[in-house]
Image 1 (spheres, rainbow, N blue to C red):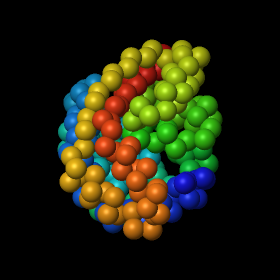
Image 2 (cartoon, helix red, strand yellow):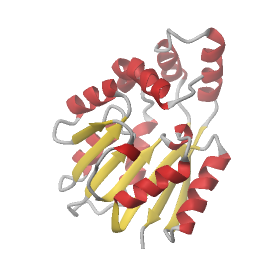
Image 3 (cartoon, one colour):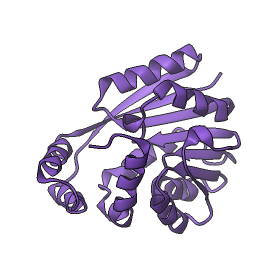
Image 4 (cartoon, rainbow, N blue to C red):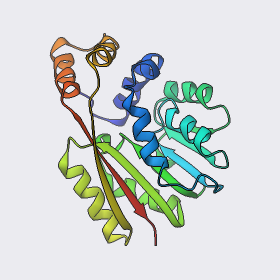
Length: 212
């Protein structure tokens, strides 16, 4: 359904107004599991790759008050919402591989890599942006086994120390219905495919990769 970065950007532009209210409650649980691995007192510089409307940036800003947080997304409309949700964070619009960015202590990416076409290029870019002894945290719905395996294999060749957690969550019927309602421009067959995926239990992996 979505074939390139431009289409992905437009897709999320269209969802930006309804995105926050259609996030399942377990989203906050995922955020908590991510930040549980970080020292709340450290003045980290944190980068959210694929930040959407800035929900995780806001969570981190509240949970880690000493952190400096930035985010990037290819959807300009998502970024406009992010600026409202988290006004004390800094945001970029565009492709992470083609924008000049500083280095960070922590890089987080949630639900992005299932949309990435060149995983090796993207991981290499994130590695370049990560300070020595920094941590890269990648979490995705475990729907494409080859994606997780490819991420891990690439990180292993870069000598990262890796640990992986697996978690299962399930959105409620009301949460699923609410999200499907936002897809008014989708064909019914595509809506049904998305509904079926959402009705399955969401199995997430979280990769914690420490840079040596």
